[in-house]
Every structure is written in structure tokens, then in C-alpha cells.
Length: 299
Image 1: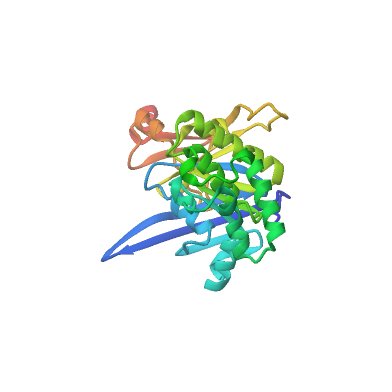
Image 2 (image 1 turned 45 degrees about the vertical axis):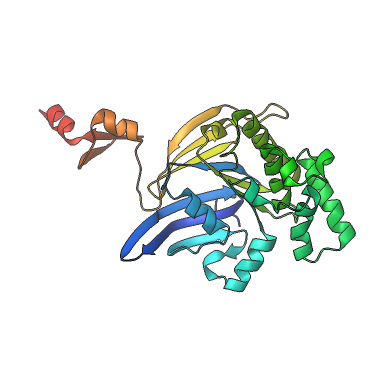
């Protein structure tokens, strides 16, 4: 899908709401969230627990249905798909990597057999699926571990196998939920390297949800979710070959379609912003004043 500016987007979320009903209570997980992800992009979504990032990931993966809004992935409108179509979408168009390292794999199957399993379910012939499974395990650096079962692999190696399984059928989208949450810092860095190399080699669109602040050194764009809305974006300059990610050029506050901004919390606390504030328009910018400060200025 192509925007009016000509940028190619694979994911478009507009004014997305998700409300969970628990007994007599309603929990609002997403509150009018907007997000666009370009085709072939490697990006991350960060936020505190309860901010809505995992809910968003589940919606993008077809595991959950939003209460309202619009979600386009590729050419599919996820809100208009039947349950059967969503199953097909999950099997063919999305790869998943979860935080629980062991939970991604079947323990009594070898790495090769785990990578072959989704292809068996899709009806791939034996020779073709064997070649593809071997290719993906080699791509994640485990060519020498094909016959090993998960209990003979380290946590990082198990997560590499999980990534190979997720990409075995060459889906256009990979969703990773806290993929380094159970790994030490050195192993986590190697997993981020795998995501980057696969993104470059196969052009797969990768969305990583994480608490791990180190992700800001590994991807070109980091979106922060706060209180169910996109709040901040950190943008990186394009990488040169073999040079790793570029430096962060700038951090932006996100203005949604309704004209809402979420100011950074440290700014709010420093200026003691609360209740009503004054917004003043200059020639090429606006300023935000605490109500009492502006009254003193007027005097």
C-alpha cells in the first residue's frame, strides 16, 4: 500500500482501540493508537508494562481483534477478515518469536525438525522443506547444530532456532515479543545481530516489542507507546554497509490524527504542567506554558 507521499507502508494502524472486559470492569489497552511501518523495515516498539505494546503485537499477528479503528497489513484489512482467513494469515504471512525461549520449540524434535514443522503443516514436499530448514538454520548461525534437540542448546541458540522456525516459510512479517528477555546482554546483542542480518538478506519486515533499552542501538526507528498511544519516535540515519546502525538523529513527539500530543513526562514534571496549559502560536512553532507562568508573564 502506498501513501500519498509515495512511501511504501506494509503496516498501517489508524485510531486503534482495544478494550478488554473483565467481569464488570473495562480495561482500555489501546486508546486511538496510530502507527505506520514501511515495507522491509526493522523497527522496535518500547514502553512500560501495561502500555499496550504486546496488545498491538497480538493484533498485528491476527491473534486478537481490535475494538475499533483500522489495521492494514500488506493488502489485508484485519478487521474485515473471517476467522478462517485469520488462521491462514497467521500460518502464511506472519512469523512469531516469543519471550519464553523454550516455549518456541518442541523439546523432543531436533533444530532441523523444528524448522521443518511449519512447512510440513503447509504441505511442502520433503526435499524442498529440508533444504529450506537447513538454509534458515545456517542463516542464524546454527549449521553445525542441525541435529541437536533444544535441551542440548544454549538459551541463545534456542532463540536462534525459534527465529529460523518463524521464517521457515518466508513470511513477509516477523513479530518478536521480548525476544531477549531471558538472555544475558552479550547473547541478546547476538540475537539483535541475527534480526538485522535476516532483515538485510530477506527483506522481511521485523517488529520487535521489548523493554530492552539496548534495542535503540540496533534498529533505525524506535516507537515509544505510553498509555495506549504512540508517544515518541527516535529516528536513525541510514546505515552504511557493515557499519552498524547510525546515530540517533532526533527524537520526535508524535502528533496523532486527532491533534493530540503526549509530552515527555520529565518535561511535564520540570515545568509542573497540570490541568490547563497555554499553547501559543509563533511564526514557525508553538510554545506550551504552565497556566500560572503565563499569568505572571502577562503582568
